[in-house]
Amino acid sequence: MSLLPKITNFYDVILKDHHQQVAIKSVEDIKKTKVSYDQRLINENWTFDTKPRDPETGNEIAINNDFVIKYLILERKLSAYKGMDLWAYVADFVNKRDFTKILSIGSGPCAVEMDIASHFKSGYQIDCIDLNEKLIRDATTRAKKNNLNLNPVVADINDMQFDEDYDLVMAVASLHHFIALEKIFRNINRALKPEGEFVVYEPVCRSGMFLYRAQRIFLGFLFLLLPKRFRINHQDYPGEKKIDRFFNEYDRSGWTFECIRSGEIPSILKHFFRIKHWGRGMTFLRRVSDSIYGPNYHTDKRQDRLLMSLLCWTDRFLRFFHILPVEGLFFIGKKKHI
Image (cartoon, rainbow, N blue to C red; front, side, top):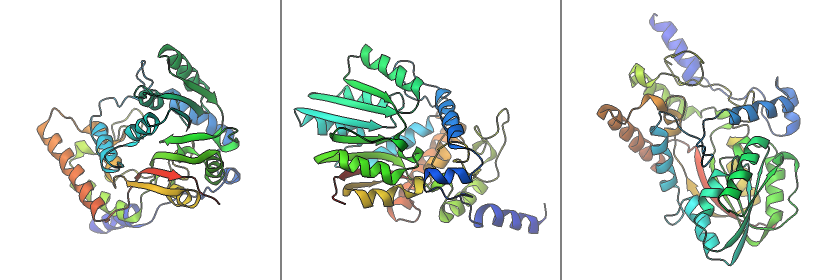
């Protein structure tokens, strides 16, 4: 390929902005897209039903991907509140009270909730809500087996009211699948008791999982430097082992609810809740450590370990100096009169 086509390709892929073809602001906007709301529900359930999970806990398993674990541990540490990540904070909140009533929205198989509940030393009740009937059924079975006070319920958060008051509402990597964020946050704010809190651990990347321009440029140059074996795409081309020249960016909200309004979550949280903690996550690291490219890094190889550490420290540098926007958030909010 001659120089001019290479320059043109770099401009189209890296410098030219990419974004959702239809900006989703409400359920009604789904009608403007090619995939209906009902079909997205089917696709969403299928996606989560087929994820590999630990049969004992229901947690997703990152097969052949140690890098994503390293990323998650680091983000939870850096975004923590007084040294406590969401898991430790919720346990501390509950253990300081005689009884705590908790609502978890978009809980999936309730794996996180059960893990946290195992550290409770005082009374509690957790209502877990998710639209996936299979995952909720599995959660109900595990909760009974482990004698945990969980009440798993099948419901679509986009279209429901909360009839009870809660001391704590939590959302763990679920808000980026919701459309009616304003309605949901308003209902949560109303459902919180006067001293109640809303605790969130969430990817807040640009809606559709698109990159912000600065991220795209950084990853563009990073991919030019990375050897081919670190650019093998393990997710987007079934049956192939395609090597990407650049990060494969496309609308990942196109057929499910994945990151459908993720970029708006921070601003809407600020509107509906008083901020107690705003824990900033990582900048670009998720993009090279998740299921797309993460399996390319092998911890039994010294070169890979060094590269993983270099990427982690690079992200910390970019995060500290606010050079790139962050894509993760640990948020603690208080009830707000609006």
